[in-house]
Length: 166
Image (cartoon, rainbow, N blue to C red; front, side, top):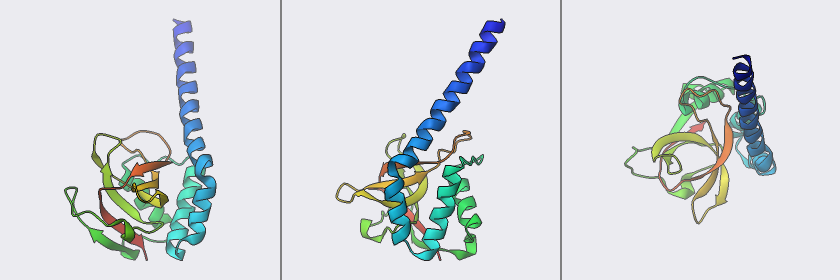
C-alpha cells in the first residue's frame, strides 16, 4: 500500500514537472519573437503583453476559462472593460475577420481547429505564416485545469471577434 502511494505521488510530481517544463519551453522557444512583437506593439498592447508575459513566466494559474485569464491580465495591466475597444464583433458562425485587421496584442476569439473546433480566445502575438493564417497566440487552456498559460501557434482562419486595449 505504501509503495502504491509513493508511486502515485511520484507520478503526480513528475507529471506536473513535465507539464511545467513544456509550458516553459513554449515561452523560451518563442521568446525573441515575443519580445520583438512587444517592441512593435502600441503602448496599450505592449502593457498588456508585458503583463501577460510576466504571468506566463511566473506560471500564474487562474481557475476559469481562457476569457477569465485574459480579462484578469487586461485589468491588471490597467485596461478594464471600459478601456477596451471592440474592433470586430461576430459570431462563431461568422462573419470572420480579414487577417489585415489583426494587430499585435489583440484579444482574439476564434475557432480552435486544433481542439474539437470549439471557440477559444487568446492574445495575438504575431504572424508565423501570414499566407497560411498561422499566428502565435498566448493561450490559456482553462476548463478548470490548473495549468499556466502558454504560447502556441494557431490556425486563425476563423477569427470572429477582436478586442483591443485603448
